[in-house]
Image (cartoon, rainbow, N blue to C red; front, side):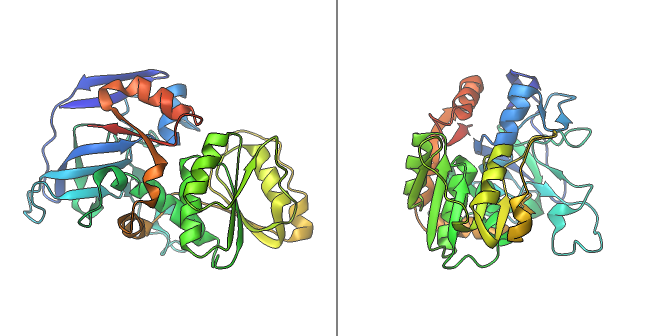
Length: 334
């Protein structure tokens, strides 16, 4: 089979690999689409994602759709259309019973956090545990289904904010995750959703998924204390400072974007007098099932996928995915 492997910074190869054989409790999938995520971009362009450095060739990819190739148990027929929950959780830990994604010791498809690395889905064939497979509803296209994982991340973030019905929402950063947070917040009943970004193209996409107020950085001011909940999706430290100012007194901020693993200048002083709640959002637990149901409701989120590029053209695909003026979610086709 063919697979993509990142060997180091800006060194990704379309190379031969043995076709894996499933064991008991496993399923072999024929991968069709893999989304390029922010972590994949970091691994490719930097050779590391935060503190996780590539120490061996890494196959990226944790956002995917596929069809069943072989299921030794016979439960899933060949050709069954599926997506995958990419996490394997660590052992149970007191206090985290309802949040298995926070347990230490687990792993995630396409991650260099573990040693050896947990290889990802950017291959023609992929072996996963049966429990990780999610069968898709009839009528849900495989291209759209590749959004299930990032949409689950977005829905988890919105859930962390509590009941947002009737709320005034600001989403900072209208990249792929920001767009999905906007859609998830709108579906959850938010009354007013604003999107802030540095690029007009990103804001135009935000309008198609539910943002009614578009704020271009450098042109439009974000009013202080104007929003009940702020979702920071850019990962820029300066944006967290803006989020603190934009949130109302007694409001909340959900940090969704991956902040740099470094000391950063962030002004949190206003959070004291406002008694703000700031929460981090990390992946998700069961929300992928809700995400699949959302995707099956209609084609609203098709606009999030802006390019589909053959996997053998991965260098071009990663360049396009890095340029948010040209793209939102880029899919690799296998």
